[in-house]
Length: 338
Image (cartoon, rainbow, N blue to C red; front, side, top):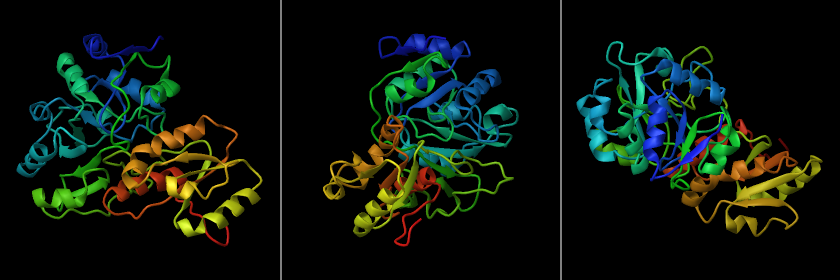
């Protein structure tokens, strides 16, 4: 299969492929997604197959409008408030679905589904032209770092999917916040750019401790159960910048090529001979660059170990640390060794 690349002048061709049951990657403000007709179970199964994704990991349903959601789910008054306040944008809302409205292939066997209306106007145009919602998991092989530019998507899926809608690099860099509106109080299942502090004025306090599920449970949202965002090299989280010299000595003693992913300030203390990737100046730029950095190290397969700088898990830092810890399998550098 030849993977075609579409743009604003050929978006109708991308929409035609969606209608034909094919898989087309698409841009959002967060990461690129892997799209297929959400009303066609065979099309959704192609996404699972392309990603090598477990069947109990539900697919986010990406829409062009709240009215499209109403065809498939129950929009509560509180959910309507969230849509008015944050859509289009990086917020995914879990709702109870209408009877037989969506295939269990899409929902992972649940009677709930996660809906998202992205900021990207080109993607919304493709959905509108297709005339149906699309499934929209991140465009990466299951367990690998999410794609934030077309080159990342081609790396994972060239020849495996029908097309890619190109609208340049994404802006946010990590996936949307996921909030479950089918429980009381509403619960954040995946942190993102829309933080609890932003949600509280709209719907009140939300639970923030529901990010994981048990081995036998079906997750309501992606990223809750399986190892995610992991490059080929082992990521080790550097919690304290003051530990950098000790961490560098420890990494060197492992006897394998290693690299460092950190802010510009910390990288000034890293020897020039050590492979490094800049996360920029602060947590905002670090969040934007995280997946691109993990993928950069994947393009350097001789590197077997990555020291990655941590941030305080507050505000946007909660989203950054959620992804970083998953990519590391919760492995931290400790002064007495890992």
